[in-house]
Length: 134
Image 1 (cartoon, rainbow, N blue to C red):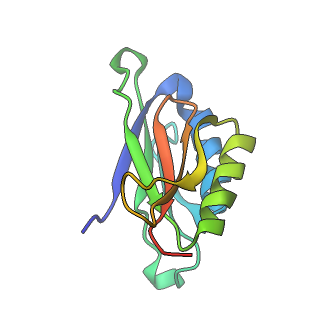
Image 2: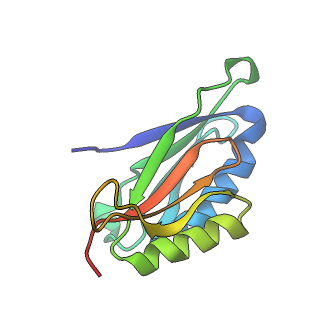
């Protein structure tokens, strides 16, 4: 079970990346819940529908100094249905993400794998996926 994950981005990409995720994650029910650090370099997101006492930051964006350019990574967000995948993709493109795979079935994974892919401002491959049948 995953409790939380962290995406490290170069300091020069940090603000654009945070704005990108604020816009794209809101389409699937996530919100920025916590920001800390002397330069606000730690930004935590979580499910905005959770009761206040259960709110949990499980997706973090962390700024790293420029010489320490982090390796690119892949992260996937599970969505409750295919419409949420579509909404996430539209929000991601509107927020400046680059298309890396429009919403659709990916039968090579399994018969109900419905996903969409974008490249975020820091160059990471981000996915929204639904595993439920229609």
